[in-house]
Length: 268
Image (tube, rainbow, N blue to C red):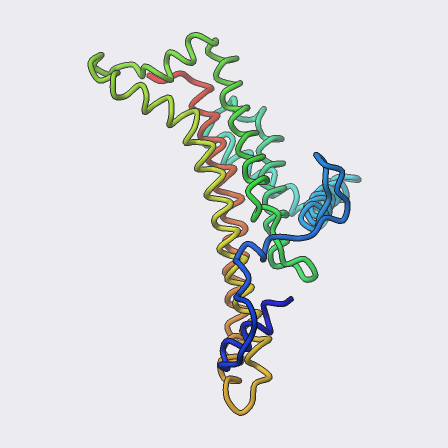
């Protein structure tokens, strides 16, 4: 990675040609295959692999279910029960049970894609590319808008959305544009940006930590203390990122359930 020697040269005052690579180089990878509309690069391969891993874990866990579950089956059942009770039913209500497969799939898939950020030989979250958070946000948008139309009817859903009941009519001039933008634009946008920004920031933090160790630890007689600091701090950085990985998968799924809940029952 050309960034490492450049950083080292800059630190020790050495001369080097050019400038530091733009930060986007941390996320740019050459295509292994490019067929125009459809292309494959490292990010795509990581996404495919982590998705297969997520599917394989649940396939193995429930392939031969036992009354007294083993550790893997118990863990998988715990995830499903958590999503069912603490997200679907707790937020949406009794009707939330039919959304459990969607919410479980969404949370587990996002978690495993995020997990690639701290997985050896990968160290890159596909959700750190804007297309993946956008993909999940569009799924959430299609579902909660579709549920609203199905449950309330096309006209009634958009009427309740644009003209919340119980509000003085004179305020609709201001409130209606805000409600339309908030529900149909800002909801998916904030879902996308929250996940994307956290994954990008975490990826950069991990890269900085590893670069610090790589560049400064071998540097004697000066600089090595900074490398030791990076080495000592790295478990804390990785532990913190694991927390963020889990939290972002939960938050995305929980907010999706909140938006579905608002569509299942009309406002009062």
